[in-house]
Amino acid sequence: MKKLLRFIALFLILQNAAFAQEKNETILAKIYENALLSTQAYNQLGVLCEQAPGRLIGTKNSFVAVDLMKKYLEDLGADTVFLQAFSSPAWICHSASASMFIDGKEIPLKVDALGPSGSSPKKGITAEIIEVQSIEEVRNLGREKIEGKIVFYNRPFNNLLFNTFQAYGQAVDQRAQGPQVALELGAVASITRSVTGGLNDFPHTGSTRFKDKKIPAIAISTNDAEKLSAALKKHLNLKVNIHVDAEDIVTNTFNLIADLKGNEKPDEYLVVGGHIDAWHNTQGAHDDGIGCLQSSEVVRLFKETGLKNKRSIRVILYMDEELYQSGGKAYALYSKENNVKNYFAMESDAGGFTPRGFTLDVSENSLKKIKEFHPLLEPYGIQFLVAGGGGVDIGPLKELGVSLSGYRSDWQRYFDMHHCANDTFEQVNQREMQLGSAAMTSLIYLIDQFDLVE
Image (cartoon, rainbow, N blue to C red):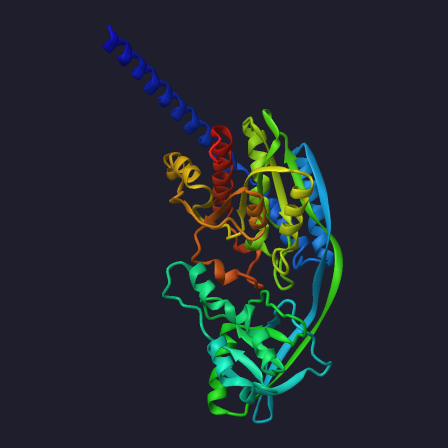
């Protein structure tokens, strides 16, 4: 009799598990079906890119973007939509140009200012070029050879690396720290090869870090970096003129926040977001308009598929990821001061290509529990759920003990568009974008439903 009872108990457990598995499969199928058949987010991304390109913090279009997305989230039916105000430094770029002089001829170069570059005199700065491959090389050359020159950082992106984010990480120090090191040794300006693997005519901008003083700092397209390097080999005393017109300001700005109230634990928040700002030279489609719309889709998909979220879902469209990361810091401070219970935070800021997986900055036990649900996500192309970072905007929440995650799409083409005029709405594939929206919504649902993080 005892054996029979044990058998019946085991049978019921397995039957319940099978039923739960089938139920979850059905729910995820509904999420994906809705996402793939909807054009709403894709169309809104087109509006954002067309009406608010170059939406760097403090610019007119940064406020246009917030207004556009605020109305959009209200129309989606979020329970609460509000602006979280904060003050931050900002940098406005009016123009940037450069030319090299060969045999009395002025040859324009395709360049753009790095943020927050210093300005040049009205006539620009004209000086000899010294080409280097690393920051260490600049330091080794010393003030004697650097002073009065324009330092040209020309180490290429390593295209042999499969993970292009790894290649970016190996090359980006030239842009991030290079101009400051050049300044310290007396350089009058700096040029950095665009941090991208392809040869093209798009200058890729990005942030650089100055301590006190600043010099003009520009990025040059990879094609023109090759051209400049070749010219230097033939003309040892080659000169370049650099012109940058930019200004530093302080601005009052906003994070945009929308909540879908939870049914059981409304005071706990599942944060999902992207950054609404974009560099001055781009529509910012993949970086990061798409992350903003994918995050907004989590609210729409929960509502339209009839899912009941236990915790409140909080969409945050962060301002100023690109320059000073002030939006992420401002929300973390807001959370601390108001005792906000952020249960989990997910960020989409790595492009909107075919989904590949999620990185998770969670406890070992939480990671183990989340991985148990991988079989539900695998049929939709989610290849990995692995330990890793969350993202720049949600990073400050880690100090408050919040579990984090970063959505990751295929990375092979991302740096063809990153921080340049090539990052347009036309580069977005609607199906790939919506597969990502569904993947994010699915993981948020599973984490909420089964209390997967500690």
